[in-house]
Amino acid sequence: MHRLNKQDRMRLMRFVCSFAWADFEVQKEEKAFIAKLVRQLQLDDDEKQEVELMLQRPPRPEDVDPARVPLKHRELFLDVVRATIAADGMVAPEEAEHFALLQALLK
Image (tube, rainbow, N blue to C red; front, side):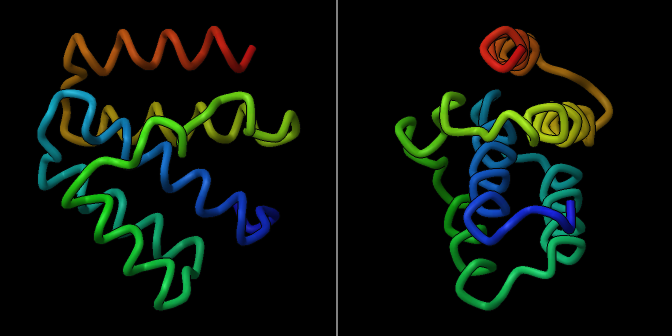
């Protein structure tokens, strides 16, 4: 994850937050997972604030365009999104459906 530039780090966080919202509620375990990602990615204060806003309201659909995910990072995005939706110990049908679509678009 450390090889991501600033733009790709925030792109990843937008995807992560959008998937946390897939079942219309961000669980505390998902928030904890996202907080861990924020630390791992060493986001700056502005980036942290943007993530906090996305935990209050999901990212706009146009901000999570799979076509904008660089080829070299697609597997990483899928792995991190998969971990996000599993963070609360269960994968809601909406999360599974959205993930299958993302996977199809990124493969």
